[in-house]
Image 1: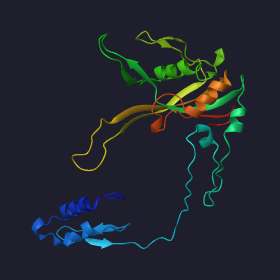
Image 2: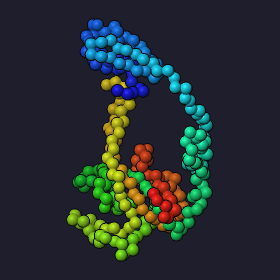
Image 3: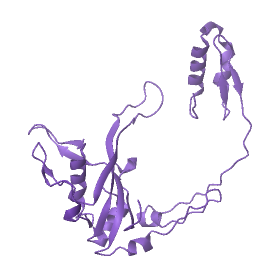
Image 4: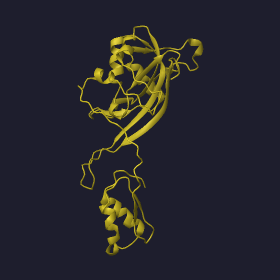
Length: 255
């Protein structure tokens, strides 16, 4: 078992359980509850006493610099990063000059990992409920519905490259076939526990569940200002969980 945050009392309980010894004969385990060193290795054999080992320091270190700045997205995006000597090849550049390149009619490849959702109600007298889109057709439709307000349009394929005709699904919903330069992949169902604090009396909250997918495609800029806002603020929900980040690359660059 590996853990950097295991409370000392919980560590003792686990060690006692693995040992199988009676609690009345558990004085040997007091040292487990009292040890607060980090890193720390704890081992025990069935019926035996615990053994603690404190590995020597590796000698490695990391310099961290903290600076208080205003909570402004433009300032955060333009903050220069200190290049790491141990990770050559990484480079940080200001975001502003890139955004200045965006002009109406410009074409780019893009990638977006998002949380496509809809608000539906089962009965007329029920409140609406946020529900994930689960099929590629509806997930694509979710993005296509937002393209205009986000300052771009997804490029369409020439007719000779389209393999699937447009139409409707078996349930009567619109189906765009493969009309667009757009693919959906890497569908993931995620769940996060929002409990706060240790112990049985900790505040319990409903888990967060969401479905994410990744869109790859080609777009044309229709409104640079709206597109810049989408790049800075993200698209869709679940931004706190890594969704909504739109990235662009010059047309013809592999994504």
